[in-house]
Length: 272
Image 1 (cartoon, rainbow, N blue to C red):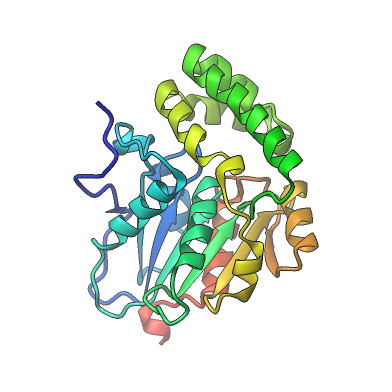
Image 2: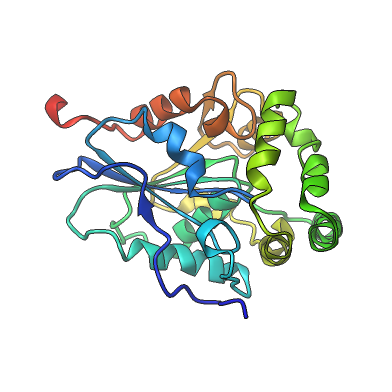
């Protein structure tokens, strides 16, 4: 029987930890991904930065974990953060796509006086939908995907998934590699994840994000036209990763790491 609460931590370091870190980063992957997605980015971060990543329910090491609603996914992230040392080291949370949407929910839930998290980095995260017609249309679309993940061979579904317009910047080689990686998932688990984390089930967060005192940084790939337009029309400042599409950290890990280093003022110990 699937679990709704984690009994152990899927939050693990992505590389050797330091004795006196200058910052601590926790990475949260998107739908279909896993904590391993961030390994290529971490190698380019300053050595004194401790880097962790977690698996979201229904993915990676916690495929059996199935929260019953959107809030349950947010609570999963909060629970994993409790495993981190409480030593005053600045903590930044970095999320992509679904991971970014969950982190935005977390950001608006936290009291403005809660300073345990120094900032949030949002990559390709949608603020939510406002119009009922948009919500209904999105749910109809997602429901079709949910049925396909449940009923069809995963490779077949993934082939069609990565033909969506948001992934048009992918080369045939990149698309093939992603499909090979994502076939490690479980179709039934993915269907359950989408059924409770669909954009149609998410609150519209932009007004709350604009008013929060928490530091929130937005990132989009240069070729991700949808999210560049979204961030511009929403009047939020955002950074562009050149030569990257929707999945900027996978497309250009070196450039992405440099953006993080600049945005979050990350430093090596010997530069302090």
